[in-house]
Length: 359
Ligand SMILES: Cc1cc2nc3c(=O)[nH]c(=O)nc-3n(C[C@H](O)[C@H](O)[C@H](O)COP(=O)(O)OP(=O)(O)OC[C@H]3O[C@@H](n4cnc5c(N)ncnc54)[C@H](O)[C@@H]3O)c2cc1C
Image (cartoon, rainbow, N blue to C red; front, side, top):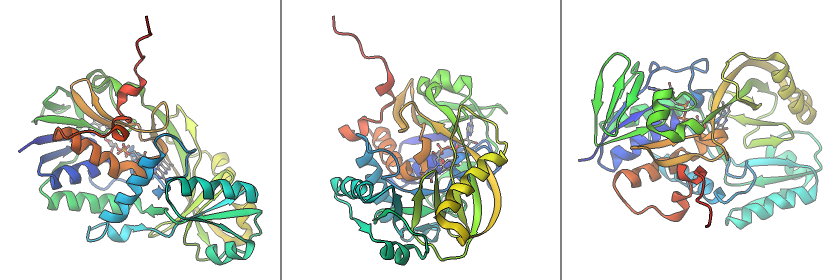
């Protein structure tokens, strides 16, 4: 039986733990923080909006993987302890005009996905909002995960599958087959997987050089109360809105290179103002705001594969929630020595290494 130690218990580490355990590995997950993380802790996962929106980023060579991961969300949630923490109500993009809306429709159809341009009255019916928009499109394949519910459900699922989760275990260093904590405990395994978000220490970066490429991308979110029963995610200029299990959030700003967690009122006001331009009085109340630190990679897509003598799953940038299931599939294939299809190998950290010049 393969044994694996995972360092980092955010959404990425937890999805990997569950998937590896289902594949028959003996898994231990080490997390520096306590079990009940909140938005003020270091983890990006608990602080995120949790949108599962494959067309949110500009279409790239990896967009098909975003849809692959979305499909995994859809097909694996039933029967899990976190099933009631995800919803799949689609997304509505407010476009600049009808031509812009058509661009989204075409992009979705390129991946075999359904999208529909919305007339003004369709928009109002679909969203419950009374706003007049120049153009809009409904994307069927979108959803949202409630971070708190899904993270605790994933931990529950992992434990039920035999994963040992050790909280308050801050890993100071790793070798190919061991993780050493700051308190001097040693966890040995056949393989080590590092998923430390934006928080890798110099020693972890030395063990897995890919982690040195991860930078911080601070983001603000703010919770609001809406007058209407908006169900799909809503994307507008400079903001998005997601209705989760317990709340509605407006997101998200991007402050590259920032590790501080300070809430900047001006940034929050900017988000709310952008949303109010479209929603007006639909925003009945503005609640608390918080920040999170995204683990950014140089191209905005995760690094999943070998680095040094260990495996890394890092740099998930703006889409760690969306991409966690496919990340877990890829890591599982590496752990069990399965073939890595080209589309998965394309996320290898090696893609950033300098290519040898032609003589
Ligand atoms: C404001 C905001 C909005 C976002 N919205 C979305 C969204 O709508 N959709 C989406 O898909 N993504 C979104 N993201 C991005 C997403 O949250 C991240 O990409 C994802 O959470 C990264 O997950 P992770 O598990 O790699 O990192 P994290 O959640 O940061 O987890 C890493 C964990 O590793 C632990 N750790 C670190 N070092 C050690 C160590 N040495 N020993 C032990 N443990 C260690 C940390 O304590 C932490 O718990 C958003 C992010 C932010 C900040």
